[in-house]
Image (cartoon, rainbow, N blue to C red; front, side, top):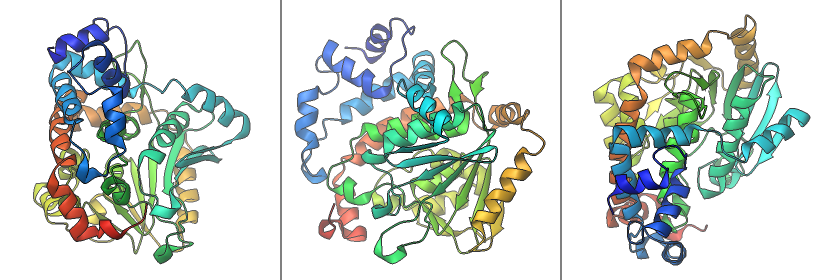
Length: 377
């Protein structure tokens, strides 16, 4: 079955919006052989990563073909920028209580801002299947909330022995779960087409071109200790970044054996192509306080002063209103990263990440650099 013909049929001529997981599920049912079915995926999910057959690579090929097409790819990107169907119920709870706890995320109001706290304390706030849904709902609710003008992102206190009791921005993808086969291939696409892109572009409306009209707010990040891998990627979508004086950023993609989300697209805009290659291909650490780090981080704050810096930044950015924020964000994106450029990047990403996710080199890297075989889930 031709992937574009399948997409046209499943989306009713691009009049129905389907998220990538639902798209692949329906494709498996209606067009057997195009992508793996539920039974095969369930059997594969029970295996450690080294023993998987790589059936999900067909999903990568299917989504890459869809994203490669300007019309179909734009429609799929639009679908992933819409609020999740279940976010409306959580929004009602948040508006009633001013607080919302989800798996992997917590929302609370602070002045005219919504503070989104990333939570996975045992794993240094790493991202995995247990955090993905909660994070996207939290982003939806933060952007839909009518009582706030600004979103703040920070990491929770962790229980991991080395940093117990400290706030940590985040350690990227959960490498233990990756090694154990607990992270499916579609996780990458749901994440980067979903909540990460929503932070950058806002929430789309079904009837409007997301390039022209999205529900968006400025985002402020508060980096404590470190922003590793996926958490460094997230910083590249932020409008203002506070960083503790001792914090650092890394993108250890080579040691992990995967592609670091949209960092290959976005990082060169901040630090230049050469430093970006050093960070992604040679594990160059970027201390937030360094000249290169300051190209990503807007303000360096004392190690013990983050709470005060957040409060000050919220007040500064909202005391005159943020009416022009959405327009200015769209104007920046028009020159930096139009949706069509992102679509083309994600087509390459879908294809190449599928190959990386099931490569023997990934297992070798995790065992060599992460001692993954001896870590408990």
